[in-house]
Length: 150
Length: 150
DNA sequence: TTGTCTGCAAAAGCTTTGCATGAAT
DNA sequence: ATTCATGCAAAGCTTTTGCAGACAA
Image (cartoon, rainbow over all chains, first blue to last red; front, side, top):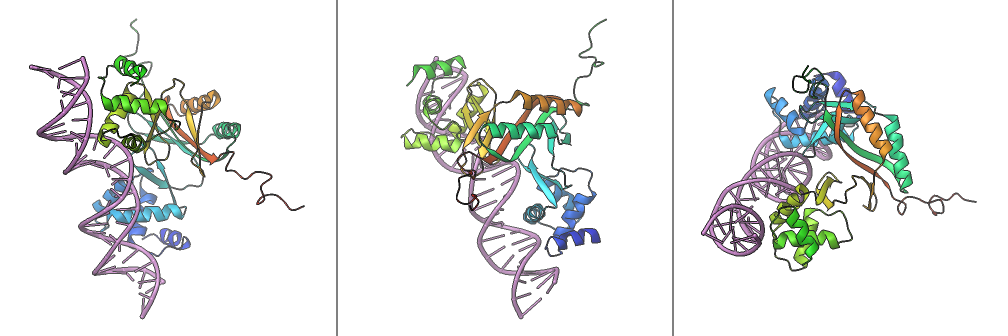
């Protein structure tokens, strides 16, 4: 049980409990940055951690409140959580394979602020997800289907 | 029963039924452009229309498929529907009073495409909602709370 | 008539909550 | 010893689906 994780929980004012440690360790160890509550739950159950789904939801909420995780609605059906690495970002998701990439673009932020201003609003935040075909899924020039006959 | 609505349904290839007519007439008559299924259902029930919530959902889906309505997730808990007035747009919602405004900004679209390109994606769509304080809800210069003492 | 639609009730999918037990400090 | 957290089951919300009866064309 990583002491880094323990310290992180303590400085967030959270008691050290198995569910909290395991959930946070999971995020620190997994390749897949974006996980739903169900994803986390299944992973932990596979690792023989005794935990309830309701607890996973509760812990995820606490970690978000503590600023350790962030959550976002990537697909309009469920929340996904990821480690908060400081820099705010938005997501782009491949409509074919589900791959998710992150980005942050000051010029886009500027446009959002300008649009809000123009409508008399003081911008406080936004929710943005781009959809498209990632480089692996989009038709390529040398693709048989799209290549023109000689 | 408006013949305009009837024609609209017919050219969409939909049979003329009471639920379809009533739902569409509701959108053509209401001030509030953005309504959830529940909103539509309650309004119709108040007007003594005999209709089931499941039917409202089915009809809304059909009208969206027909391009007569569009739907969007403004608050991450439920879909809202609105008349499709041709021009694509995004929304900005007041975090205080819930007011919704619409906008469309070519420069912002340009940034989205540029960002997608930069990540190797072919952009196909997006989901965007801005959040902020509308002109009525934001602190104004002459506001007692914010005005500096002389 | 015939194929489609409706209403109702039940179910599905994600998330939250009530409650008694159990663990952390 | 207290206080807080957990697990389970039940409930909440939005949306979908199964089905028998009802309706449009």
